[in-house]
Length: 330
Image (tube, rainbow, N blue to C red; front, top):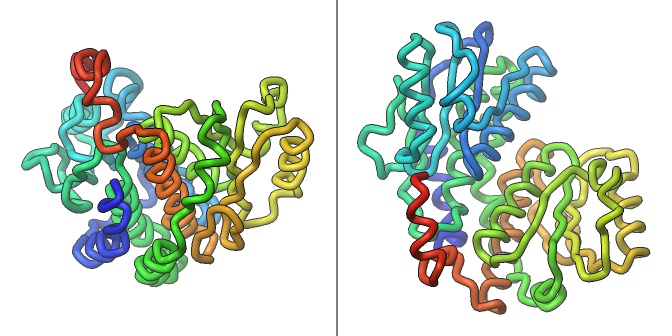
């Protein structure tokens, strides 16, 4: 996992440089589909499309599992199906189902599968060696960014140019000191709450998944607002929270949530351009998914070292997980 995290500036640069994306039709329905981390990338792409088109386009981000089995797919639909390796059961089933009804399909995936399905295949990069995926998330974002920039008209031109600056922002973030002092504040706390506002809510969800995979701790990502509605009933001092500092005006909700968590005795960690706990390079708001996740990925690696968990295998090397998990066909 350490190697994959460190490779991401070059990996994103390679993905941006090598991909040739086809034009999508803004007049036709557009669905971004994936599972887990790939669905998080789809949600970012849908967010970009809506923001850059000033709400004229509102694509859906849909879990590939459900749409592979249920729900109408029309011949005029455009499906972008994202997966790490192109070998998972339900993304492939969804592509086959969409092709059968005449919908247009694009598969965004790594280089591992020779035939992942789809009318068009856009490759993100080499398959990852660690099962806690990091680089394939950022490279999927890079490919999806190029795809979205071609869809949204004049706003897409500036966004496409901004994507070219992303590898340097990733590099600057990874050159910051590793968060070696943070695991001691989290190591005996569970569950871990992660919150974000706007596009950062997606990063919170992705970070929670990485903590589960790599640290074997229960974590949950959610919006700042949901964390203030009903959820405070479960806040206890044994917990910890990571708050992603908002990249645009959130009506003061992050500060209100921080005050509440402090009063209730939770350990509170801050992730943001100003630090102090988990800093990342300052970038344009829409580009934050590329860099806000990086200190959280590195936190997972440092916590795994402290806990003795293995983010490369996600318990695939110990029983009963080693026997039970492979029985589930992903």
